[in-house]
Image (cartoon, rainbow, N blue to C red):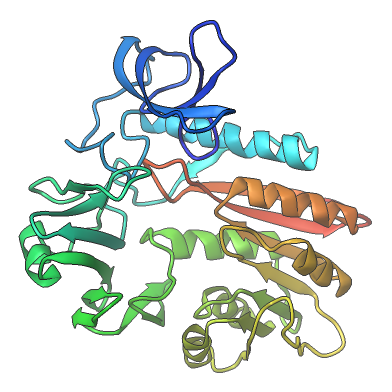
Length: 379
């Protein structure tokens, strides 16, 4: 399986690589080439399975395979998680030179990999509302019951069509305080602009159109893994980089740690100050922001965007010599590149957990512990 969710195939006896949607590694399939515009590789999709994998299942959605919202509904959940484990281990081996055994765990409360996506974006063309086809602007209409990955509580397709007023894009955020429908062009259409989310009994104010983990169980799982990675002690100091509205900031503050959060988005930074009034929140780019933690930094949380933290941030973090770093990553290749950079400046990977926070897709979330070379693994 290639990074991104397609299978790697060879066309006949040639060396031509084709990235094929809708397959399972080990199968023999007949494919349709959907994009032959590149010299090095093509794209394709399965049109007939000649020798199926034992892990092939019937997709729960009638438009699976045509819709670009998820890639793996045709693969059993156990195999999905094994494939993600293999991808993480492969990227760490290829990009960071590490042999790491990784097991991807289900998120508590998972319901067969369905009904978890609390944030959805839909598009309309005047005749239907749905999701984009893969690598296309074409719209695949929603099935009558809606997207099976969408969390309960969202509007029905008919209501979405009425709110769309024809063409355009519309988004739905399902939260503890209700459902918000909004449009990038028109703003909030229904519901509240700022919604409530709770993690382990602690409430957070979050913009409906801002960042928050999309799986309802993600917040508790990630904060628990972060605490396990850092093992904070009361009175220590910490940096929470890319802190968003303060999820990890709050968890560390509740553990008695003095926290400085850094966030470039001004709306998210303002909510972080509201959510965690005891913390110091700095608005600015992580690469350039002033970090005001006093004389020393004991702990660092890194939760960068999908592209990763990058070499400049990694070197800046290593320069303050924290005793432990918790790196939260939603892209295993970006994680592996940053882990390799950390190794070049004296920090090594001493622990990793992975969680299936995006079932039916190729995406996975990791929490990694990094420590100075001179520290024992249990230190």
